[in-house]
Image (cartoon, helix red, strand yellow):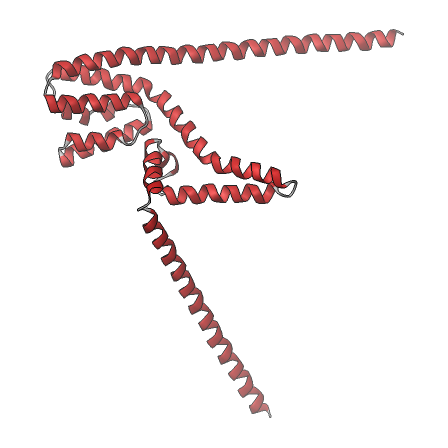
Amino acid sequence: MRMLEISERVLCGLTFLWVASLGLMGKRHAKEKLQSVIQRMADRGRNLVWHERTRVWLERNGAAFHFGDRIDPLSFFLLRFLLALAGLSVFSIWSLAYGCIAAVSLYCLPVVLVLYLNRRDNLQMLPDIKHVYHSLEIQTRAGVFVTDALAELYGSVREKRLKQALLDLSGDLVMRSDLGVALEKFQKRFDNRYLDSLCIILLQAMESGQSVDLLSDLSEQIKDMEAAVLSQKKEALDRSVTFYQLGILVAVMGVLLYACVTQMFAAAKGF
């Protein structure tokens, strides 16, 4: 009897191990199949119009710089979808309408954040772009080739996004020596009208070979940029003055309210 019990236990143990191994193989097979499906979806998505448009939009607005190189149209869409799903799940506890509003708001949040960060970068890059224009004008007048002048600009720029792009531009010029391809690649990394104008002017100068027109166009762009920088500083100063005025007004109103309440309590105690 004892041998029979031992044999039954051994048989049960072997059966359990066999079933467990089948389960692990099934999980591994399911995982591989899921990865294959995701890869096929990603490959098919690259051929879609929305994928290309989203990729260009993300690149021009600096999404890779702020969120890492792993950001792509598919991961960006999945992030927006998961945020919307989380908002719908959480806020639907109170009301379905709240859940829908939260889902739509969270779905649009990454887009708004990318646009805000790009606008902030454009404002911060204005002084550096002005310096780039001045450097190109001075070096071109001194007889330095445009490619050599562009290859050395990254060392005098402080804003990180522009500095990295100029560093990559310098590397492309050294490795490929093709100014047109390098400038087109550089232009696609920004949604900034001053950098677009710079690339267009340099490409036109490369095709026509007229450095005098290049210097004239650069001078006009510098004047416009100086006006934009002054306007930006004026707007920042106006905001600061308005903020300080509101702070002083709130402080005065607080003091007056405190004095009125104190006077009212003093009068009430007198009665």
